[in-house]
Length: 427
Image 1 (cartoon, rainbow, N blue to C red):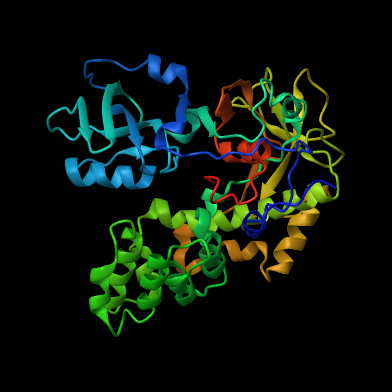
Image 2: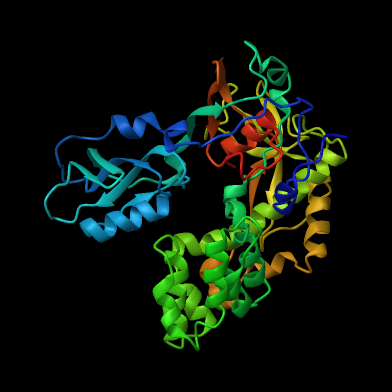
């Protein structure tokens, strides 16, 4: 059996490592420049952009480069400063330097071409007849620095490369709130219709990874309704908590309080719980030594077209479908109200995990907050990547690779580093 994960990984459903590689140690994200992510967008979409406005091209397309700020907050800042709603399709972490694409409708005001707001750089690319859509995002290109690895040899990842094709495609800790790990708990409370609990978790939940200052503030927020002046001590980084507190002080009910949170953030709660179940299923598969790379009878599978998964997945299909020239890899379903378990090895585990949480597929349809309902989905069981490279230096190891949208670079990094304490190691 593979080595068990650290405690915080287990709390996110990531119970095992996929590889036997010992790990090189070290840390990531020492600075925002150490973790660079660039979106890979459909090249045909970019090719069709025009420099000048045309009658049928009413959307403006931009590059957004940011540093030290997550995508949702960057969009909120741009809206506040420019009065423009920008649409993005990828959610990027705060502790990184990222380049992603966005679009906005022509607001008939002055054309904003290039502008810098704090650590956000906005660069106009051209006009398009359609906005940015999820289907246009192919993947992400990563360049990451691992600081101070313990194993500093000239070829410190040679053993890892031999196992690189068998890594479980886990959702990373940032999906759940990193050290705080609260997002999926909020989602579970919403699915159980415990909306008061969902609000309380968002406002007051703490873990041992929270700072003393954060724990103190959240303790005081437990009585925000009776001591409204507490709102004055909420720091700038807790803008969601501040919004919640404001609505509670106004006397709003829990559903109305939750709806004060921007919809793109609000939807992450139930999605995070789906991710938690997925991680648990994948952990059980690894524990039982299931193959994550090869499809078995009754599995649902993706076809990897020309060895590239980046949005070029042709279709998912049953294992019994006539063979083709393309490699097939297993997929695991994400639970939702449309989930009807089949006979395959992964569906059986999903049903078991939902039962353990006293939930069923129908609970993912939320009548009280239908905008948070989730039908379900699919995700490949194995982490697929392209063009993996590494360079070992005296006090660091640089790695580069491309990965499909929806995969987490930290999933690969944890297998490389094998951190004893993921949070202190930058995860």
